[in-house]
Amino acid sequence: MAKNIIDVWDVRTFDSELLDFLAAQTGLIRNYLDTDHRIFLRHDINEDGTRSILRPENRFASDFYDLEEAVGRMMSQRTIRAFHYTRLTENEAMVLRQEGIHLSTPLSLLRRISEVVAAGGLSGATAELLYARSPFQSDQLEARLGKFWMTSHPVVVTDSGVEPLLKRWGGEVASMWIRDKAVCAKLETLGKPRIIEVAAPLRVTNQSYQAGKAITATFARSRGSIPSKQAFDLYTKQPLEPAAVLQVHTEGDPSFTEMGVNYPPDYVDVDIGRWKELTGEED
Image (cartoon, rainbow, N blue to C red; front, side, top):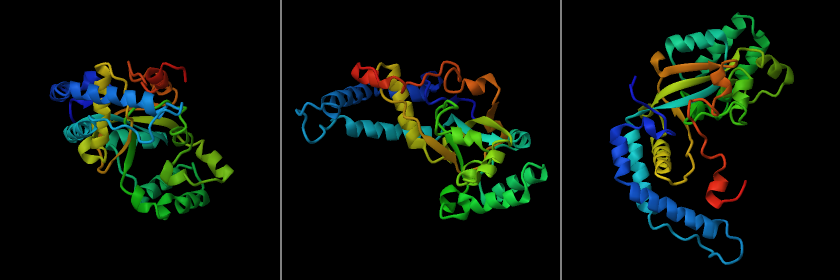
């Protein structure tokens, strides 16, 4: 596992090669973002009838996009910290720490369901229902097969995007399409909500380019610009060794409750209050 794990939101974790490359492009980054901000104020939110029909071009756009792609290529050889939101039994959490990260497949889902049944957590009938209703048994099979999804930035546990993943056991491939109230209630009693902190090598993911955008945005903020954080979802296409599991945060742990607020230490969600940054107005 790479020693230098990059937090895409924290410029202090960027290695010297990455920092030197970005520093050499400081002028371009500032020029593009300053111009984009002016266009936003004068055109995008200007509703007094004086704006042009066509959005003005940002003359720095082409070079800036090339820069983001170049940073993305650099990131393809680096490892970032990412986060996976789920609900796991104690045994599943133990296996995760011991064996590392496995990819989601119909076979792995069947194995998980069978283990919960064997432990007395589900009836055979409910197990059959879960497997039959799984997105794996639909035209979503190829879209979901052989992946392990993560987020690039920590997300608060009350966020609507992760709350369902923490609330019911099974994840999207098991409980996503379950509407039976009794079954849902049972799934909410299995295991505990957990957040898996992962060292994700971008060479085995689908999102080096998005990582390049996030890295560029974070660097730009360190130089006084105000881009969005450029958060993104990503998935690994290969299993990851146990060392890739940096931490398992479980409901009840202070770090679980503080995720995306005061954890990781010094993390700030720069998108909160961004409207005021951009316009000077309250949200």
